[in-house]
Image (cartoon, rainbow, N blue to C red; front, side, top):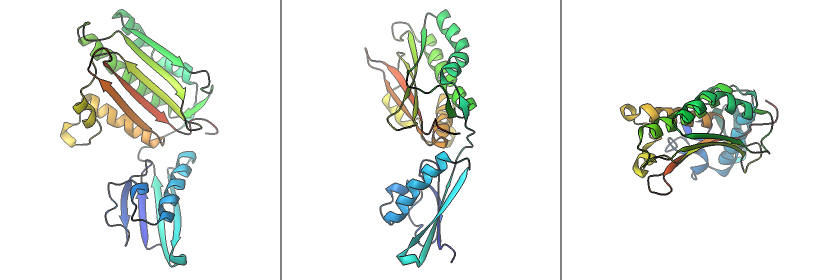
Length: 245
């Protein structure tokens, strides 16, 4: 018996497409939020995402039987962005990739610090190139804004920190500055894909979001323009970062 319905989800659980009798109204929602769907489908979607994050395959599928097996629903989970995990030393990666920016920061009397928590494993499994690009882009952007802002408004520190997240195997990397900050209305628009309005730093953040989602994680931005706590913090969360690749 062939499945009568197919539901395709991305690595963050968002429904990318669906066919068949259960497809109406699913688009633009996460599978787990679609309460009209049977619990069996939502639970299968969760476990399928776990399988996707730990698998070397970019596409994984599962068939769910409903109504005593009378109806079959095929779930397909796929990576929105190809991720090539490889073993990496986070300490060495951050130090080497941020070396030039650290020198530039010192020349502008801005302190760039790098701290990796003691419990972060010596080897993590991430897409090294994409992670390196994300962190250097965040630090470079913070450095440019702080250089171009009067010292009475901008701060003088950029802190890069790597730590173990609350979920086993989860790596978190934060880039925090005490610069002028980003207005709250701008922060709410940062990840809206509205075509021509996406450019520059906004486009870079969208790409970073895709990279985190493809790892099975997320990006979070917090910012304030009010003294004395002005500044911006961007957190990258990357699940399943250690173990076997």
